Length: 210
Image 1: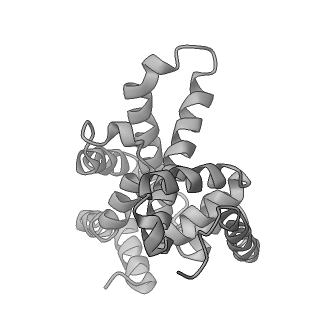
Image 2 (image 1 turned 180 degrees about the vertical axis):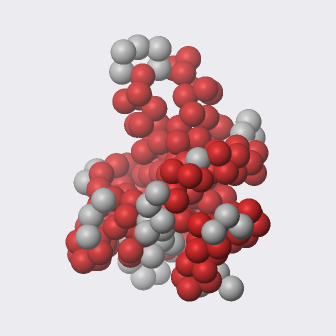
């Protein structure tokens, strides 16, 4: 039901002025957007902000800005929604963390907080999935080691891994998000996977068989 053909049909209905098509499109992508929010949100905000509440604001934003999307309907509807969701998440970080960033570099600070949250989420999931039984007992320390290793990666490489592996975006969607061609996105992903394995190998015993 959520295949690309069905999405294209709904966009065509949306262009024709069918209001319910928007409701259906948003419903199709809601869970993906929620996973993205939960993955990208700073850990300090969890418990203070609910992803479902943020998505309600995104829904209103998208409905109000629909005419802007319809000017360029060749763009992925999901990527467009994701852009609006990212902006809402930045607003949430700014609102809650601004007390820690009251200087002229406030926006840079917010962007760094977002990157740190991404690295932390990646580290937590990698540790849970890939750690050997002997490392599970030292899980918290291992997460910190992986997070530090990830922060040593090129920012774009880390982002490509986050988009493809953790947000589960298709290659064409990654290309749209990064503003590059599909082939370049695919090549970057393969290089990023190689680099990820290299940085994980720097953690003693992490990729060893137990």
